[in-house]
Image 1: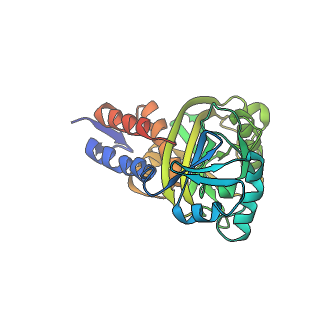
Image 2: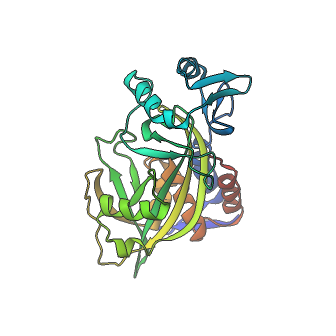
Image 3: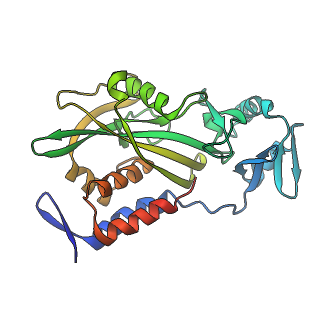
Length: 290
């Protein structure tokens, strides 16, 4: 039986596989369509809505229902429609517009407030950055702790930089923006991040259906660099040896839900998970869908 060694202690592969797989399963717990109805803009499906929301949406003159679901006939009406729903308490209002697409590479069909995306079961894109430091005693990872007043997952552990891609920005532009705001990383340093993969999932959450595609990046940081919480969204940062990160993901739920998936991908690429457990996890990650 293959054994990996963390902090000098052997960890059986069955423990590795089981401990990590639960995070992948948790992020792919949505059953689609289930009872949800398709939501379209014109001929393009952009989301899935629950029957209760569908009943409210058909009261808007720009929404019609047929045998295939609901269709928004005027794309420009979507922002105001979402504002009305938020005012009625049917979704959150984040005051940050996201582009609406049917798929990541498709055209922008409309825009919607970030808080309304989950109730529409819409597709969203985010960026996550592994902030890495090579030291004499091995590779280390910067870990952020989310502020206690965050709307979602307060106090959870997070990446040094992570965020949703707002309307009009590319993932790389978002990375540079978030790096400055969240960790005071200079733009020229942030631009050295390398995209290493993408992870998709469909997850039922308290705020609704999360259909996310996460672009994953590695950023090697100088040993002398220390991140600083610039916008108050992060309570602080700690530099962890990789072994501690591996063990924390394997045995706890301390990290924000989607951070676990990006870190599992990192651990596989670094050879910290190998053999059949790595192959099983790689297949599970690849099977996720946004």
